[in-house]
Image 1: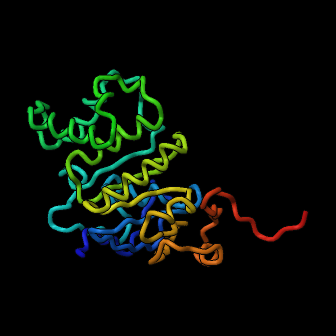
Image 2: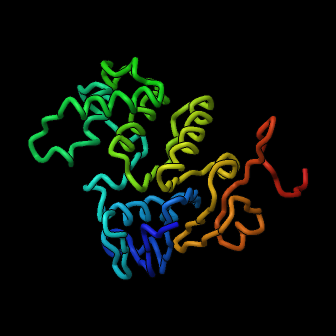
Image 3: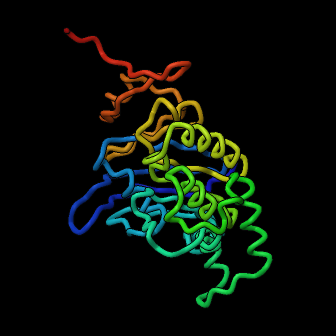
Length: 251
């Protein structure tokens, strides 16, 4: 097990506002980390720090030798779907090919080998039959599979996902986590989500982010621990029938 990312005493935010305070986290090559926390607590800010999209005010992010930035294809990124313009005139296959853009230089000219790689990924995710469709014709689940294909087409060492189950149905959500479980055999995964109950079946560890970061070295987390971490997240119990677990209360 090798360390691939080291986040050390990072303070980060936007303009003069500090969102993350003294955050530290190590990511290893077989990790599957679920990041949870309230809206505005800094989850996406943490991803942006790892991706190099924002620079910390203080502290540092260190990468292993061949994992410098997302631009060398060693970090795959699946953004929130609401940030994607589905009106843009591009096909499924071209979206996935764009994940190889940094291998192709400024002037994009994809080789036959690139297209074979893309077709293999599309087959793997069960969307090869969609490859010629414009993205505007895709359902929410189909679009997420396309964006996931784009994120992994270059065989990254680290895959980062920002709330990938937003705007999709329950069937896709189950498929997504099964896919990620298989991908974790090949790469480290960091996923931001609000669904603590579901991810507990798949992730290996959990990080609670609410300005500060508390790392829980297990996928089992209690309501008491969440309160201790100052992480106000609602727990959902899962099983044959998923349900919300409520505290004792007066009717």
